Image (cartoon, rainbow, N blue to C red; front, side, top):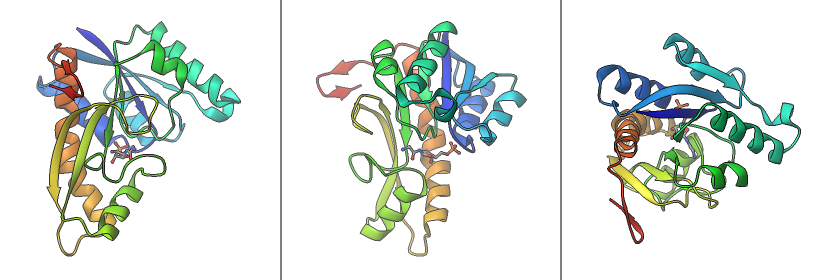
Length: 205
Ligand code: GAR
């Protein structure tokens, strides 16, 4: 059984999807042992505590620098023997320490079909605003490994969502979450924890 540490910044609906998947037995090869937020007011912390999961708050401000912030998160994950780190709406950049200590052991959910609408500056509602502005007819969500390039790591799972004519960034965000993110994030976690992911060149299968 793998230990899962989840990094969050906000509402934590993706964290809730993971908690629910664990409860239903869909996520069975890993256990969410820790939830770490970089914002003390993140509602996801309440969700974690309600589910009996240990929580911690590590903010960049209290750490004083990005380097120290990265180090503290890394130390926390090592201390608690985390095998898989899931970024579930974690809106801070992870640094060198964490990336090297947890190489190929960090995954992220992004609310678009990468390589569209991703990279620096594309997070949360901004992603959906950009998709609507561009006029794409299909968007979706991606779960990918995390490396030093923002949203640039290898893709694990993707799911498409059709855009509707009357969509606003808010309605689109909600549908992408419900139809895609909350589905593929627990699936990817279970695939990782059960050892079913393998790398073939550029592809993760
Ligand atoms: C989610 O839509 C997630 O994909 C996005 O932030 C939201 C967090 O919601 N993440 C990014 O944009 C990362 N680039 P949640 O806190 O309710 O899970």
